[in-house]
Length: 231
Image 1 (cartoon, rainbow, N blue to C red):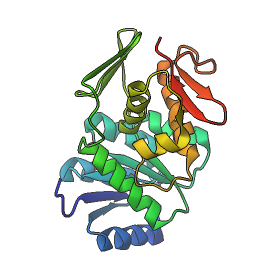
Image 2 (cartoon, rainbow, N blue to C red):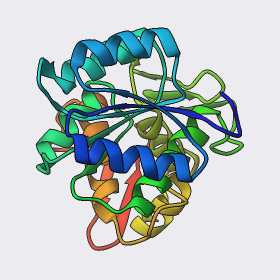
Image 3 (cartoon, rainbow, N blue to C red):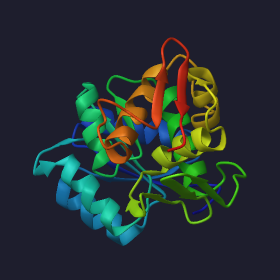
Image 4 (tube, helix red, strand yellow):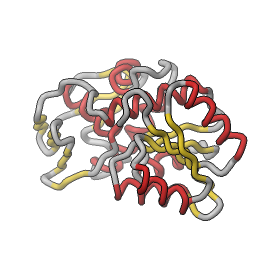
């Protein structure tokens, strides 16, 4: 990564939005490359090795979800989905496919820039000084390698999923408020986004809980926040 001018690959077929993103990103010190199709995005990602990818889902020659999955299989580049699809189910599916974050159109430049900063910070591995290994019964987190196992089986998490789980694990059996989790994981972002926490918790439950509808480990404390109960 060039710390002065990180490279952003914008994969977006809408000309107006592409121009807006290009202007906004360059004015804040980012280098920008553009792709308008699924295939062009795949090729540029492989050739340029960008520091971060902004990915639209509605591409003319393919679904952006499958491209997110292919990019994630090839590298650990942060992927932020930028889409008009606003349903929670769409966000969960994008995270499952390998995206690190999800921005719903329309959005403000300040919000997008904050999310990019968070994604780049997490990618650089500066998300805090956690203990090397956290053993919580059936759940084990290796914070150095960012690996998670449940009942001895590896669980693949996105960067933000891991960071959220690590915060809960470091405060096991303590109730953490939405505000505390937002501050720890999404520090630069505005505080009024409890939906972020809910979406990522739902994704974590799908990957870690035997029955996500009846969680045993990742518990909701109604009106307050969440708690990780060691199992």
